[in-house]
Image 1: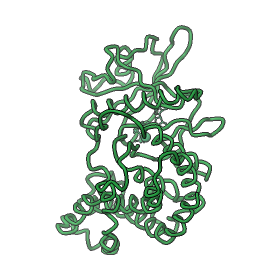
Image 2: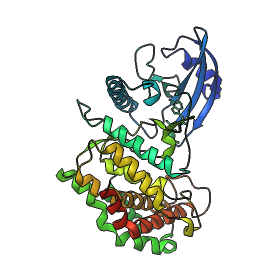
Image 3: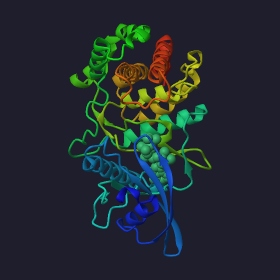
Image 4: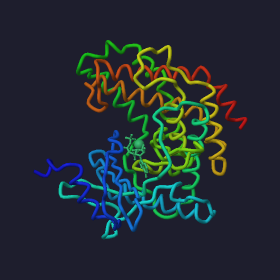
Length: 371
Ligand SMILES: Nc1ncnc2c1ncn2[C@@H]1O[C@H](COP(=O)(O)OP(=O)(O)OP(=O)(O)O)[C@@H](O)[C@H]1O
Ligand SMILES: [Mg+2]
């Protein structure tokens, strides 16, 4: 019976559980994303209309919501403290602000065991699904770099790893080899070129892992989902205001964040483009992204980290290519497919991008070195 409750009924229940004392006027779906369900809720509070975000945490992916919320609580508080100390204006538009439950907890578990959290709605901003111009690439690079920069000196216990082994390319390769060897759907034949491509470049898999292990690249606090639609842009100035979607904030290398930006923000196509001639890194977007990132990261970035920035774009793209191909070989269990060979197409775009980065790697890194 509970599953038949409407969104309105669920949100009505939730509205009384957080430290919001206005009346709920209405609530709409903001986004049913890959991970969370996000609702925009409008309250009437002491004569004004105020909006909040209610978000259902995906506990299939994040098995331990306490860990996720502990991380987010610490990280947002730390950033808020820094912004206040630096007398930056509009602090509550520049970092997420959590609203605790009436019991003082960071999330509310409903009768169906769904976990809900609430944030201030950041007004006057919007997100974009794809990078349209170089200015946005610059802004996104800077926003994620500043986010990392703010967390460089977070004291206390290590943050929780909300998804263990998230960027372990070696593990991804092992899973890939196993999929090729067992080939349960007889698909390896259709992906011969891609399999060879991946095998030829295996030695890059351990570069950042080894550097983290020997300490030559420091472990830092990173975002781990640096897509453009996790940056809120100001409606009038188009300045990046705030970084959202903090479920995967955890210890790691800043290189992975930059690498994933290269992967997602420099090609003009979608991830599943079938016309590979269109898939490539646009140099002007790469440069704008790198400029924004290096500017924002300059307070902490070490020479070694800087020297691996272009490489990290190649590595992350290679890693995602491996994951798409592995999923294709194993029957498409992880990434949702909408057509035959969808995951193979996705793998092909990634490998095409790897090639594109490779062909300009020296030039791009020279550019970064000059910044
Ligand atoms: N505090 C906020 N104020 C205004 N809008 C927000 C806020 N938090 C999130 N949003 C909007 O909701 C969208 C989804 O939020 P979020 O990225 O946290 O969820 P998600 O399900 O993980 O998304 P995805 O799977 O697409 O990455 C954001 O892209 C943004 O447009
Ligand atoms: Mg998101």
